[in-house]
Image (cartoon, rainbow, N blue to C red; front, side, top):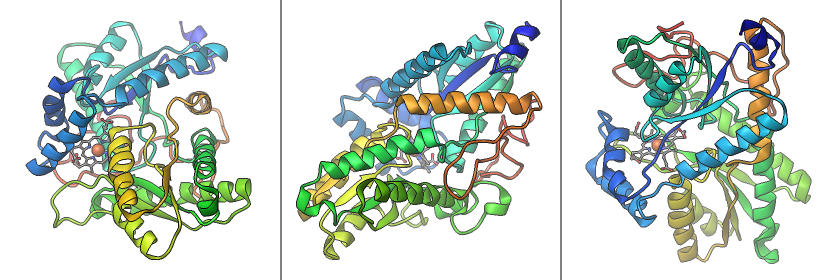
Length: 379
Ligand SMILES: CC1=C(CCC(=O)O)c2cc3nc(cc4[nH]c(cc5[nH]c(cc1n2)c(C)c5CCC(=O)O)c(CCC(=O)O)c4C)C(CCC(=O)O)=C3C
Ligand SMILES: [Fe+2]
């Protein structure tokens, strides 16, 4: 076995775990799903009712599960085509297939070195450490069951990998082409991502990045700048752009990142901007936040204003994204074998760390053990 692993480009890893958020698959799943997501998180009941309503509008089905099934197929097809013999499993934090069940099956199948791909591209408590906390929790459960624990690592943040960025550039160019010609050149770009509490943004990423929106805001600004630059080159038009936010929750007196996309559309319209393309860089695929908060709510706001808007595509299961993941797996495996690599990244920040350092994206309150980082209690 060790010989096979040594000669494989993904050795020492023997499996990939696609780790996602999870979502309901029917109306009866919605409330239990929301209970799973919000356990002990103090989200106002009003907000939960509102979010439940979004899911019911779509038949109680989150788009995220089919998106993950498509990504699984794309990864398996890409690995097979490129001779990467690495099985891919799928587990979620908040709905079936649950992370703990998937990890148990992987251990029972004999996997010992597992690399995790999270469907979240940026640093933050919600987008990184919370995934690592759930991994630690799953490992603790398996340990209590007497299973021998595998070693679990997490793939670096991929927000600035060309395989993530380039499909979004294509998406913006296509969205612009879909606008009426008379407003196309004057259109502004609104890069959107999930709002988080400003305190969580300020402590996102490694300690030395804390303050002023932390890694979360810096990473999004870097990607937005790269995409806006590429779109300028492709279309020959220099369009103003801004990073804005969506999907705010939490108590109203707690500051979250602003402006909200709907306020931004109002402000741009009042300033005489003729059109806006919304670019959801914060989302890996068409999550409920994209289908409801942008395609339903923000579109309704734009219609009310008489402002032409388009929403550009998320990366989803684009083959370039699957190839990028393969690239990063092979890269990380080489690092683990003690080899030097030149990691691939666009923008000014460079490739993100392979291992989250101590103090990265701390929890706002009651810190929990987190796996797959420098402060992991597991090997
Ligand atoms: C940064 C970030 C991402 C992007 C990174 C990543 O992708 O992980 C993300 C993704 C997602 N968030 C999702 C769903 C929810 N998020 C909630 C609540 C919250 N999200 C937060 C942040 C983020 N969330 C925060 C700071 C809260 C407040 C409470 C808390 O600190 O927990 C709530 C509770 C109700 C509400 O408050 O809205 C729900 C239902 C789904 C599934 C969607 C689908 O079904 O397609 C996905 C992909
Ligand atoms: Fe969320």
